[in-house]
Image (cartoon, rainbow, N blue to C red):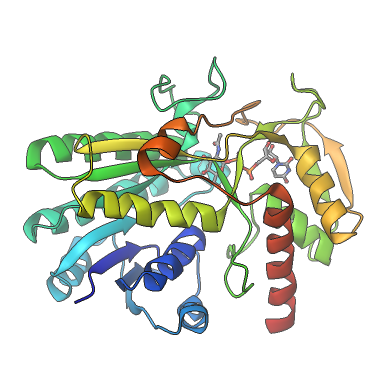
Length: 341
Ligand code: UD1
């Protein structure tokens, strides 16, 4: 019998790509999502790609009753991958209570459900934001956690702490995955990043500018202490990232963990500047992007990229896709959106 996995936020960007990888590996998938920043049509797109329709449960995970009902209906779960969260850094500064309430109460409700139904094996979406601006690069999992720069970042730090405390008290197994900057889309171009409203992240803003949805891209800051003056990030293809979740899950299912709670950086280990991403986009698509240099965006860190040694050796996972493929797949997805909406 196939093992059943709950994927919260499974119609979202990283969630949907992870559901595809799970279905490809013959897991049964239950998606729980409140569709606050995604569409139910993603479920059909997942079916088109995999030939399997995951179970979809529209659930408000901040609501304890709804969450408990979800767990009662699906009490035979082998594991949980928890993506559901608000993720816009700027918005979190304006609406901190929304972020603390949403991201933390849903986590607590899910952990309560897991406890009640004896479900262990929990994968948590964390973020490289927990490192702030590291003194030493590339950044390792053992690098110090810095005070969060935003309520969003703080929810990830507190989330990690909640899970760690919960695991210690209940012999619960968890893997915390600290993502660097996921970009790109599935090679089918049937799923990708589809924020409701204006995006905040670089690559959707690039593709939306290129396709004419917005007039121009602002490059936030050209006076950073980097070779070309723009910020450096470790961009990782969303499919590479999704695959790491299945590996992490199986590490727990097969009892190969070294500790009850483990932490892994998920990046490529390479840093690219904003201008390098723009150049890669222009080179691969042949499109000249309309962009202007503007002032720094408050709260942005200058540069960060991952030391991926621990994930490479312990998980046996390595990001494979190039920056060229990342930007091209993002572009194919934007073109698909134009044709289908
Ligand atoms: C941020 C968070 C990350 C979070 C992610 C989710 C931090 C340090 N990072 O990533 O934890 O998971 O959002 O949304 O808080 N840029 C421009 N012009 C634009 C947009 C972005 O120049 O219009 C630049 C930014 O200044 C940055 C880079 O592009 O240097 C990437 O920005 P973005 O895609 O928003 O991701 P992060 O801020 O790195």
